[in-house]
Image (cartoon, rainbow over all chains, first blue to last red; front, side):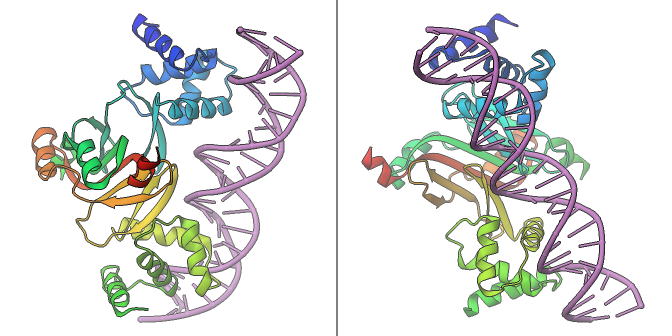
Length: 146
Length: 146
DNA sequence: ATACATGCAAATACTTTGCATGGCG
DNA sequence: CGCCATGCAAAGTATTTGCATGTAT
């Protein structure tokens, strides 16, 4: 495993009061290594199983829930299926373009107005700490094919 | 039922080639009357059941799917549960502020930059036709209580 | 010894499907 | 008649839970 991934995981371990078991480390590793993909609970289960045979699916769900509650992963819904993704920076926005034709999921950032938090606080009194944006349409490739 | 709701349903019937059965009318009515709420499939089932006893849950799911595919309702995911809402205007955006404390769901519009579609087309070649935004945080009331 | 995490299997949603029936052109 | 929508029940998925066991302080 790369030093980078290892360091990242160790810093998360500290955040979680060093409660990172072997299983949880495997799950995090799978998420970090596949940060460009969006994994379902079962995807993660299978990935971990390939080098930690005895993992149970319940542990995967329990761990993902723990990570979600600690802001380590985000649980998103793409076309009626739940997927999990590692959150690299606290403030990173998780915005997706979803192609309705080929199913491609394109990550984008900074779609929202910059001062959104401030605007919401002033106009609505709403204190936001997480946002999720999904935009459906046709990706570049599929638009051409039209 | 108000004339308004009835007219609305009739216009949808036309869009769907007049395939609006009694059951589907009931489901639509429930959705329209509760347009300020976000209903789960079961919520809808129970609402319809109260004045159309024989409705089956499978019909609810099948109808909601039909409506979704015809752009009549949108299926959104709020805190890991699927909810359905009637779409009043073709171009209306489905943007929500979700309070993590009291669970309030506040609809907002025009959160995104105005020229988003154009920007996406130019920068990413992505042709968008629908967007969904969910922002989590504390609503005005719960922020105060902090 | 205590507390908590795990794996397994069973239980629980939630949603979809097969099929016989029914309504409508 | 032929077609499609329906209700019911059964089957599928996806996820959660109970519990005995294991592991680490």
